[in-house]
Length: 317
Image (tube, rainbow, N blue to C red; front, side):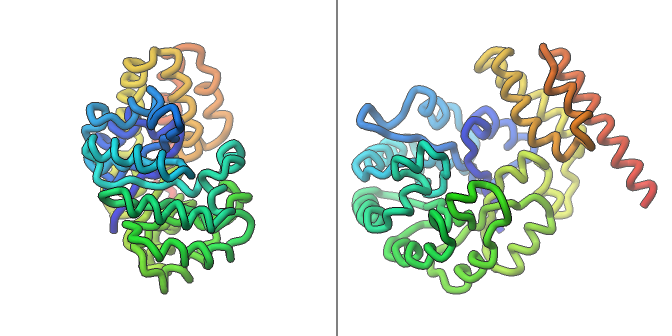
């Protein structure tokens, strides 16, 4: 089984990826948050910092491009290849309103004839592997029948499917039944993505689809040791999370200053807190922390209580 870390804008940038790789990796692939080329260039300065080789010493990094203009995609892919990247991923899954309104991301799925022409051009002109991350469609999961016909016309290196439609965003239950149907007959290498929160979730998808690759995002942000736990390994528990959190805050502070680093950490702990905090009351001191010292103390107290609570549960069992 291959495991990938999903791209999550604002969270899984290079600082996060490098720290996660050291404490909870390795992953087979780390997908970067998308770059969005325009007539003004392939990358913004911020996007370049996230994908430049010197900031990505870990293996398996795959840049993702958000585009509906073949010329922009091809030029960006060529520059990424010159940087040493062997695989480029096309984003057809972002459900953001501003993205969709421009017929990019999941919005591109609403104009399949244009998507087909786009894919024909990029596969003719780009060397190396092009993979795709997609949703099932815009408004109806059955839209994917026609989309799959398009994808299978091209040498897609790997097709990652998030089995929701655009209008569902990240709410409700993924249409795993549709993914299982596709997995039985799709000729392309497949990867599943969507709501893999627990070992039980992983086990179900693997058994029902026989898929050989899984992409996790929010599930790993919530529980970074999930894959090790699934493999029956010791993932380090709260002590490892504390070390990871300390390291990540130091790295963020070095890159963007302490004030902005605190915002980044609080954003991450919105996910971690759902696993390590028993209630909103326990996470509140972290959210309200006004400086680094208060934040670190709140994290330590939260993890210490989590460790005590879990130990108590094990004793009672």
